[in-house]
Length: 200
Length: 200
Image 1 (cartoon, helix red, strand yellow):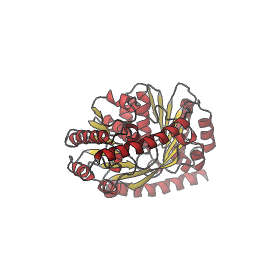
Image 2: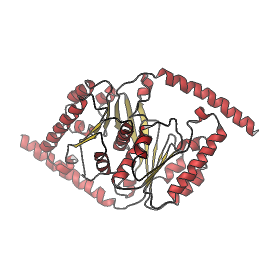
Image 3: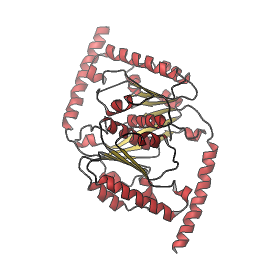
Image 4: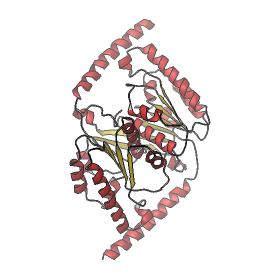
């Protein structure tokens, strides 16, 4: 009886493995990917930072531009700044309701894109993270066509991860992988403030 | 005219800041969070690894148990194993269609939970990542009630991140924050294989 079950399991999994292996064999291309992590749920920036760690584990060179920055004491910044192979730039003085200064926000956005464009033009950079970039399109602080052109002209094997809510459709169209992170539940709504190590 | 626009922006953002500040003031509690990252999209494990980096940036002690492990050469494992404050355990020999051995998979799942239970009982561990745990419930390899009891009994300030598709409802009910990662687009379906630094 138990042997029967084990054998049925083995046979079912062998069929499944054949299907999975065929799918894997069909995907043989290597390519610099444009990934977009959007949606209201928790996990957009943290996923980008996880990919940074992965890339560093392969000895890759990475570049990060943070476009909106609510605080200067984040765990991710402290941690990654001390790793070799990381260039980390903060361009932004917080959310637009914190600065309340449209001209200053636009200047920070443009400085941020200048830094991003440098990374996107450097073939030695394997991964570029553009953290919270999408908000700049929502506010009209950056020209989407310019951004898409710079992304399209980057080195062919360079990966780029863009995070932020409400990614514009043209960015989604240009991307290779897009995750839309739904917010089923968030501790903040239950009265828990942002926790170090989790939220910042 | 431009000054007008700047002033309207300032006033609108000041009202928004008042609302945001009120929400933040209402969330004053500190708590060890249970986070679940589920759904078919890219970003579940990478988000957990990003939170690891955040936690390490705050000098926290972290513990990772990987329950399903397709390969032994991942960037995340290479990177985090060389960081101080990280305990990293791999319990699993790959997806069940790779091993094709139900008894071996169940033994690995139980060994994994024993390792997890140790971390969950240790008040010096600030963050526990249970990577790809949910699959073990889908396959019936672990008892959900035992897992929920161990999670509930952990130190009150300890954070836990669980990843994997199709999280069971009872786990979602027990969680503080749940993100459901939708797969809008994935490079794999366009013929691109898993890329180092992004997917592993």
